[in-house]
Length: 446
Image (cartoon, rainbow, N blue to C red; front, side, top):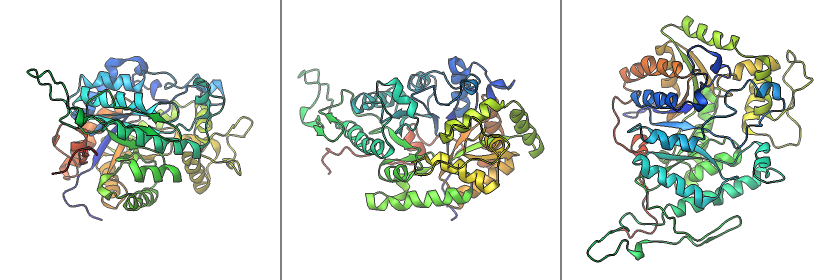
């Protein structure tokens, strides 16, 4: 399916020292990146120089995400600057790039979240996005005075209502509600203020939001879930999906599924941009890229590899032979989509436990691509033109070095092919992505 006139969208997936698990040990990476705000400024400005649509920062409500402390002590991303605070700071030192971060519907409240993201949209001049997650890690409950982590079905019921409330709060004020008339002393038109008065299963929220309607109408809504519940919620509400697809066939299946479900929710396929994660190692030649990849793999400690698998699958692998076959996931238990993806990959490729963690040490189940600029661009072009993606969430192996490589090598190649912008078309994230500015539900038409 050849796209005429369309261009690839790019997100830059922030991970302090880089996406490879051993990145912080590499000489071209910033070892203290998690607490080094200057580093994040440099990364954001490099991504903006590369004309990326947005920066995306994932988040976790827990550092205790693995079964063994031996692996945890070697992980660089257990503690770093809280993403919302980070993006608010980066808004002041960038001008165009979008700013997206994760916030959990399980461990947040709709009113405070709606207020924060609407405020970020104002501070950034219309560049904010919220990545809605339900939080899959059960240890998060221990940090929020909860006895047990809610079951998946319950989390998604709450998430659907949570999103409904947040979107409703973002429509609390019509665009022209604040007249600020000094002569009459009238600050706003009360007929253009709307209380939500929501009373539902999980939330009771009166409103209105105490932030004016934001420059984008509302921040862009992002999701990353690939389970049945996640896909359905995304088809109903999301405007960007950060997908995990290890192969083009997987990407095409997910893309078709997502876009196909939108009709029943009264949405057009173009209302949603699907952007799979791409873990990219690029160099002037393929052999140099392979050498870079192997150097990082050599820095990966087995304790970290084991901890990563435990974190991603929920399995306690203590006592297993790491050079033996990857174990089956527990029967009768609801497992995450990422755990199933890793299990299926290990089974298809007949991988041992060690080989499995080596395969996901960089992309963590996302597509792993290394080669020359033209080879990387070939893959991106194929995924884009064959119905696998509207764009990509780029995951540099190390930062800042890996991002510099992508911007300096791959971006010019994509531009040469006419697949990528040569300048920003607008100033807001919606304008970058080609998403409509939503009308306020209360505004009179005509």
